[in-house]
Structure formats: structure tokens, C-alpha cells
Length: 145
Image (tube, rainbow, N blue to C red; front, side):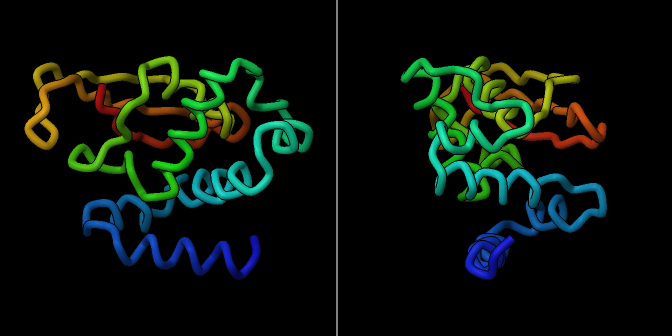
């Protein structure tokens, strides 16, 4: 991790709600891991990132799927997804899954709230817990559909 990445993370942290900060501050938080991998993805792009990734993620070459992953990565870098008040948006279920597969997580639990309102827009809010395929650690994120 380089100093510039750390400064970006610190700036993001300061901008977050208290609820989001608590999720990052807990000992088992995986958000910093996801955040720094997301920064690497943005800097390297999908092809170089894949060539250096142990599981060769992202596995897709389909432009529309890569665009969804990119959109999700950009939102994670803004701190979205940690709380239901600030979920990831504009990703369908498969896009959200591909996003987390990029960081070697698989979905293990899902809770859905129908008729959820976000900025006066009615939709579906998914709260999904993902587990890291290697070390078994977990992260729970929110996605508004």
C-alpha cells in the first residue's frame, strides 16, 4: 500500500457517516481490503489487474459486465454500500456479485427489503453478506436495485 492510497482512504473515512465508520473500525472489517483492491483495479484496468490476480479476476471479457464492475468499484471508492442509507446503486444482482467476485468474495447470506425508498425512488434493497474464499472473513454490503 502506498502513501497516496492511504491518504485517499483517510479522506474517504473522514467523509463517512458514524455508522459507516463503525463498520470500518471493527476488528473484522474487510472494507479496507476491498477499498485498496478497488484502487488497484482502477489504476491497472481489468486486463493488467487480471494478469496479476491469483484467481484471474475479473473472469469476464464482456464489455457490459466490465462496465458494471467498474461502476461498482467506483462506488466502493466513494464509500457506498456500507449502510442502507448509502447503498451501491445501478448494479443488478449479477453485477453486484461480479463486483465482489473481483475481490474473491462469494455470497453466503442475502436479505431483501422490497418497497425500499432511496431519495424518493422506490426499489429493492439487498443486504448481502459475502465471505472471502480463502480466509473466510466476511463483509456485508447494501445494493439498491
